[in-house]
Length: 460
Image 1 (tube, helix red, strand yellow):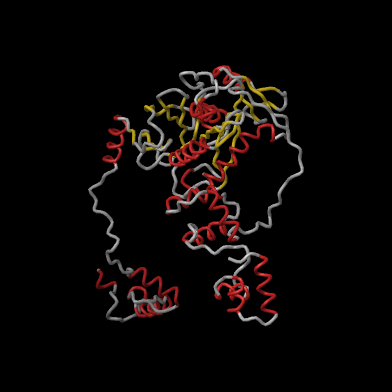
Image 2 (cartoon, one colour):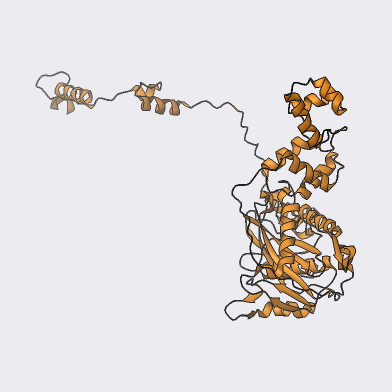
């Protein structure tokens, strides 16, 4: 490797007419090295690698992924490269991305800056920040519309966060997701900080809703509402939302089930507990800080809100709910029914649109893939199937059935052609009948001496 001063001297000697070999002997380097610098192949101050870089086999994959998604986090890319055999560090990956220029520039994005931000102290166990994340373009099989819903809860002191997927953002789903988040965090903090979501805060009155106040009393926490348009006030959970979207949702497969997606977000959140933090000059982790937070114990059961979702009955008399299928009485394929579940209960109810309960089943674990049938429903379904059974032979779709003579005659009529039916070719002319009748009437008129006409004498 030549340093800058050696490169300058080599070019000066070359300009004076020195040969490459003479310059190499003068500077104490190999002539091939001197020639590479004189030709501009190598740059001064940059040593050529003697061994291949760890990123070399994965450069094309990184280039493709970053071209597909210029905002893909390097940590997410590292998660994808690990199973492919990359054993380099995060720092080596980011250095390679910068050195090789693998990340394209997104022209549509503009960095926002210049705003003042204050540092807010968060004592241990004092606050949990809660927020909904609307995740666009969920897998088609989820049946939740244009967005999936993730409730994220983050401990403000340590930064530990957990998320729970929900089918909607109404009050029962909020309570269910909140209970799941708290149990994943391991306890209840002194206060919950939320934004001005309608299920928590009544914007007309300016106070917390009565329903959510009952939930907070059940868990033993107070409720703190963020001021309007102050997203930085709950910046811990906002950063957790960003991590969930970039480290988990952005690379979620199209064939992923809701249960698999929930396991994925749990795995990402647990892995991020290993993030390094410094407190009082000591090195620690998010997980260690969270384990030391004094959280209050959770109640035995969740707040008893009633969950209500709409489902369609299948042809087999089954209703899908949370990765399992539950039976209803026969005769309802395609009907819309309501699945009702009181949180904390072990039995779910299926009701008609009018509110009549038609089935009750024991709740199975979410994502278990079980089929739960009531014995009475099975017997009734078998009777309905047998009653509809017939001995008539099935319709044979491959049987030859050419057009009938009537159909051929109609087709010929439509074409304006003579038909093949002899009866259709008979033409009745009433004028011929009239002429024949006139002749017969003329021949049978009574005349004198006509031997064919009976006389009075013969009659007598």
